[in-house]
Length: 202
Image (cartoon, rainbow, N blue to C red; front, top):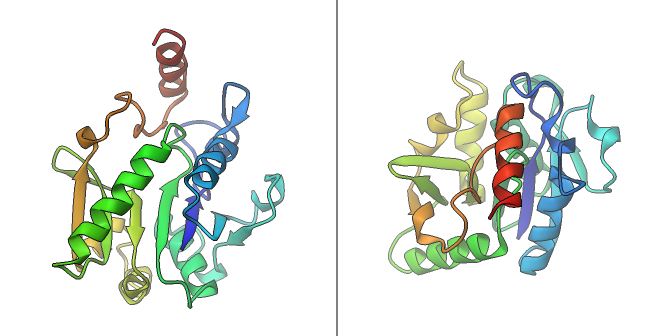
């Protein structure tokens, strides 16, 4: 099982590449790698990024979006890794702007997926916040690749385009006994400032 850290976004709202923003003097991407390693679940952790950023990571396992899918968002990143590792049985996808993801959350989601596989053939098992799926924090079966490729060949590159066409199941974030910000995306500088304040005062 491989983990994919999606770190190829333009980060326009944030103002700089979010992968290198820091919490407690540690870049987001490095923090997420540490959490993934600590779960002891993955045979490899891969950073999926673009050619402009690839040399800025202090990390050996990098996959760059394919030329024809440049600027097509998270689907391009997932696609590039799945195509490179076509013999892998399962992928865990996590966006680099979710730096407070926890070992507990990842392990619980995997358990949730396995429990539901007994009765259902699940293609994507992820978290949801209320009724809103979070497809950038989810396990993906390689069967989704054909749907990802179809989406990339269309004019709709959204993850929603894919997960509406496959079998999914979503675990509510409230099922994880943790801080209420462990799953939050950092989209703006003020989001990061707020997170740092909450960590300092928890």
